[in-house]
Amino acid sequence: MITRLAPNAEIGKIKNDLKQLPNALGHLVRTWEEKGRQLGEQASQWPMIYTVAAGPLRPLGYKEGIVTLMEFTWTHGCVIESGEFRHGPLEIVEPGVPFLFLLGIDESRHTTERAINFVKQRTDNVIVIDYAEISQGLHPWLAPFLMFVPMEWLCYYLSIYKDHNPDERRYYGGLVEY
Image (tube, rainbow, N blue to C red):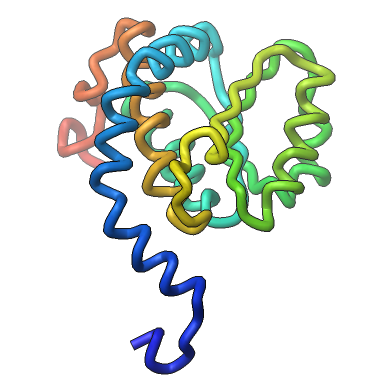
C-alpha cells in the first residue's frame, strides 16, 4: 500500500532488508552472548540505570528501561529521550551515575552522541550499544529489531549477576492484588 501511494527507494530498501532480519537476528543471538554477559556483569554493580535513546530506538529504550530493567532485573531506572537530555537530565550527571545509551545511525545519532560525550566526561559508568557496529548493513529504521538482541543478553546476565531469576516476580501476575 505504501509503495503504491508514494513509491520511494527507501521503502524498497526497508522491504528488502526485512527479508534479511531472520538471519541477522540469528547472527546476533549467536555472537552477542559473551559481550552481553560482560556488559551485564558491569551493569550488575550499579544500583540503578538511566537508559537514553532517540529516533527509532526511543520505543526500544522505553521497553528495555522500564519493562526489562525494572520488571525482569529489579533494577531501578528511568528512560530519557536524547533530545531532552540537555534540559533537566543534564543536571543529574556526576561520577558514579550509570547510563546506558542506545545509539542509532539515523538522524538522531548526533543528538545521542552529544549526550554520550557529555556523560563520558563526567562518569565512567557508561554502556553504549551502537547500531553502527551491529547493523549488518540493514536500514536504520530496523535498528529496534537488531538492538533488541544485545539488550536482552545484557539484561539476562545483569539479572543473573544480581542473583535474581528473571522469571521471578514479587507482585506481577496476580501474586498480590493491585
